[in-house]
Each structure stands twice: as C-alpha cells, then as structure tokens.
Length: 322
Length: 285
Image (cartoon, rainbow over all chains, first blue to last red):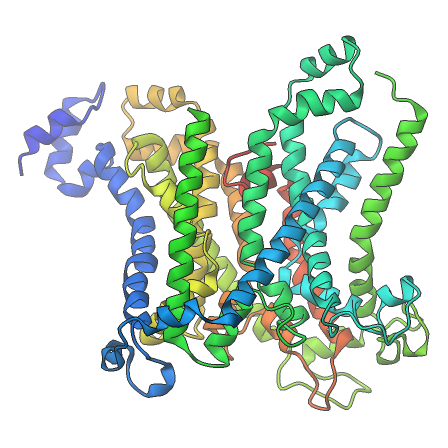
C-alpha cells in the first residue's frame, strides 16, 4: 500500500508522530478512525446496502416479471418466468383496464376532497392556537392524539362508529337501518371522514409550526399600523407560509394516494368496489386474482409516473427557491 | 395585548368543539372495550358508558377464552403482542443505527450527497406497487413469516425517517465543538462517538421513539409478509371473528385500545419533535 500518499491526503491536525507510526503497524482498521473518507464509507455502507437490496434487485425483478404471464400458481419458480414471456401485453392491458382507471379515479376523488378539507380545518385550528390562552397546551395535546393512533385501529374505530346500530346514527337521530359502510354513496364519505379525523391534526401541527415561525414584531407592526387580526393573517402570515403550506399539501397528498389500512379495515374496498382505491385494487389483484405479473406492470407504471412528477416538482421548487 | 371577551368565547367554543370531535370516536372504542356482549350494539338502547362494566373482553383476548363465554380462540394476544414488540424494536434498531451513521457521514464528511433524496424516494410510492418482487424475494430467502424478515423490511421502510431526523439533529451541533476536539488530537471516530453522539442523545431517543411508532403502526407489510406465527397485533385485531359468526366488537375494541396505547404515550413524549419527524426535517417547532 502507498501509505505515504494516503497520509498526505488526510488532514489530521496536531497528531503526534508516534501515533501515526503506531497506527501503521496495526493495519487498515487502525487508520479508518483517522481518515474521514474511509470512516464515512463504513458509515454509509449499511444504509446504502439496505437501499441497494430493496431497490436494484427488486426493480429488475419487477421489470422482468411484468413482461411475462407468471403467477405464483404456475408452479414455475420466478426465475423461469421467461417461459411465459408476453412481449408487454400486461402494459397494453393496463391501458384499457376500466377497473384500474376507476380505482385511480376514486383515489383522486378521495385526495381531492380529503386533502383540502384537512388543510382548511387544520388552518382554522392553527389560527385559533396562534396566541397564548389558558389550557392551550392541554387542548393541543388532545388535538394531536388522532394521528398517533395506529391506522388499522382508526379503521376499526370508524367501523364501529358507522354501524347501523352505532353511535353516529344515534347522535344524528337516524334509524338503525341507515347504512353507511354498505351504502354505495356514503361508504366513501365515511372513509373520507375517518381519514380527515386522523390527519387533520398533522395539518394543524405543520401549519401551526409555520405560523409561529412568522416573526412577532412584524405582526405587532401590522397591528400598530391599524391592520385587523384578519388582515394581519391574510397579508403577513399567509404569504410567509407558502413553503410550509406546500410541504403540508405535498406530504398529505402522497400519503393520501397510498391510503390502505383504514379502508381495508373499514370496508375492504366495498360495497362492491365503491371505496376501492389504487392500493386496494392492487391488493385484490395480488391476493384474490394472484395476477402478480400484471400487478408488477401496474406497479412499475405508477413508480415511473410518480418519479416523473416528483422530479418535475423538485426542479420547480428549486427554481422558485433560486 | 388584551383579547376582547367575545373573541375569547368564540375561541374556546371552537377549540372545545374540535376536542369533542376528536374524543367522540375514541370514547366509543374505549367504553366498548369495557362493555359486556348485550351492550355492544344499540339494539337494547344506546349506552355510551357500560351499564355493567366488565373486563371480560380483555380476559378473552389475553387468555383466548373467558368465563361465561361459549366461544374461545385458538390463541390469545400474547403471540401477536410479542411479534409486534420484537419486530418493531428490531426494525427500529436497524433503521436508527444505519440512519444515524449514514446521516452523520453525509452531514459531516460530505460524501454520498445523493443519499438524502434517494432514501426519500422510498416513501413516495404506494407499498403495494413495489411489493411483488419483495414478496418473491422474501419467499426465496425464507424470510416470510419470520421475525427477522419483518424486522428487515421495517428497518428499510423507516430508514428515510431515521436518516432525515438524525440529519437535522446533527446539523444543529456546532461544528466548532468537533473541530476543537479534532485539533486536540481526537480521531474522527472518537469525535463522533465521544463528542457528537452524547450531544445528540436526546435526538437519538426521539428518533428511536418516532421510528418505533411508525413500525408499531404498520399494517400492510405485516399483512403481506406474515402468515401465522409472526402475525402482528393490528392484523390479529382485524382478523378476529368468532367461529359462531358475527363480529366481536368488544374484543376488537379491547385489542385496539391495547394497540393504541404505546404510540400515543410515546407520541405525547416526543410532541415537540413530531413536526420535524413527519416533515423529514423540513420544519421545526
């Protein structure tokens, strides 16, 4: 090894020469602690290995399987899936698959209602919590609880609430025959309510953090100049919160697109396919139809489209910033 | 600044209304867990609070049978609870250790500048869209329905949170402290282990609790990668049905309550850092 050149690259200020000599005699590992690049390599290695393990090989396999008719029922091991190579029929199929596009439409509908609802409710709540008041901390803690509850348990809670004989019908003075989860129109509404209940607190939390980040002296200045609280809010607070609002909306939209647990526990996608979002659709294709190569094709398409959107979003954000 | 009384009243009215909306569903589950069978539905008249409070539901889910109940389960909560705990803890350890080391290297040594965005990508896609090859792989290496197979995937999917959270904590440590230690002869490893790590210890604890909550809350991965022996608590809860037919509302509520407690307690403990964790460090409180 050219130990001499390695020594010149590393900068180890005020290191006694004896230590250097000592280290050289003890081989590679003794030097690692003193070399930021070697140490850095060992620090990132486990994380990078995990990433490669979950990204590179699975992606290749997904592409491979998506080009075949392979299903686990074939009795053929996955690596011999090429025997049923179908030259991209899965991709042609997904373009004309009405059920898939309907599921996508329902996902978008859910996002289009739930995310703005959560945003507005969260914004209103955050506005109420901008100033100090007695019991603020206590109420704040209560309002945060929903988002800490296991999503599957949230599904269970709302499953119980929306039973015909459950408390919602009782509170609203509706007959016990008034169905929520088994009604084609109201099942989606119930899901939206459950999601909003759980995730409005996150919006509230993020938006409040953003609001409190607005310098107090600017608000005082606004007030001294005769602005009402409302004007202060619209003209000073909101414009300064643009990036926070963007973060909150992006975060919730991504999570909302992925929604699975709550719906799976509440309705299993039913009645019929009324609450079947994209994740539920993929789940059914995976386990009810065992159509794994088709799911792989859909998955890759989603992956590709979302990456494109994310890349565009990032470059847009970078441009706005710069 | 004095707030007028009217504004104060309006504020409290809205805040209390919001809290009521939050508590209403929770209360129903909590009281349901203590209700005996005849009170589970409103068939016999609506009761918010159990008329005859009972621990029967808890007894049933813990032991698999309870006095006075004909039905019994082939197994109680102990297995799924242990599975949840073991896989969440191992997954958390994996994510926190790899996340801490790699984020330190990125924050201080400036290597792998692509890493932050690439780990973030892991959280972008619906898990089901990318799980087919993972399921095939897991079956291939014999990791399906094992504690380590589930821990491994937990560690991987929560790595982005651990990475970004720890990165923000490292970014807050003044570099001058580390430089001072370097100048007095500490190796890079010693600086990390003896100087920086003790400083970010509270951050490390926050990160561990946060990641634990995420792992504990998982439903989908356990649904896909376990079958029987390592079924976790949420899966066990949602599959609980009586062989005699019908939903076991009371027992499910008891299970839900048990599953909900750890994350709520931990979440309230790290309240201050929730924003930071959930926004990948983009925002602080």
